[in-house]
Image (cartoon, rainbow, N blue to C red; front, side, top):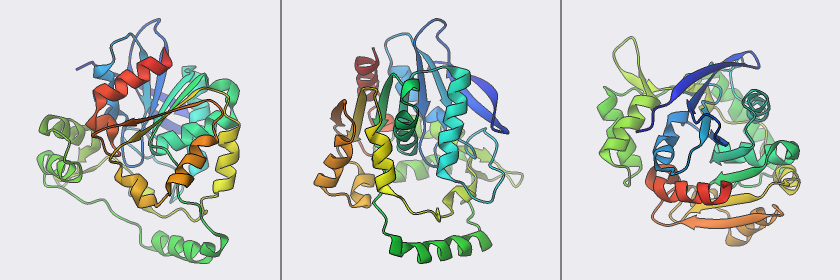
Length: 285
């Protein structure tokens, strides 16, 4: 297993944790994790890379070892601003994002096209388009959840968390589940284990998903894009996007290669890290 080191950067008033798998003088790659995930989640892909890479992977605000936001909930534009500040310090031009990270990277590449040389989007196909009429109910739900904030489920120990991860993903081996549990979880003063994530991430976003605005950002992307889906993605099915809607989103990018990874679900970097690593190196090299 390739060893990583921890960097701590001052990013917009937060102590940001960035995991680095160093490769002095090698091309840089920035890996961006998804919702309720952490940077260590990319360990299996990093181990499968054959070439020499200088790899950085931040824990988003409120995840892993990064500080929590200063408000009582989280706002998507903050991820974009955090990424902008991170790139000022890390100077990486190859972006790889999974799920939430893929959505952030894809928008950013259209907002700051001169900053991105190549973009890999792993299962970051956006959300279902919202309708203005949904706003009153969404704001009401947000207010209710602010009054009764969500909590993280406690586990008896890391082993129980690892077993829960395997229940959610049947492809996850016991060894990988144990590794993830140790990085996803932390021990509390009561001796229990909870996820290393701010439960406020579970509060609904009161701002509706404005697909037209996101689509406009995608259309401004100048970098070549590798769009990677998992053949057995449960997340795409849950969003309810039709094949035509899915194709429309990919078509927003002017220079795109589309690949599907077989025998993989949404967490394709856990299910098929070797296949993902091959795709990354073929595209980024």
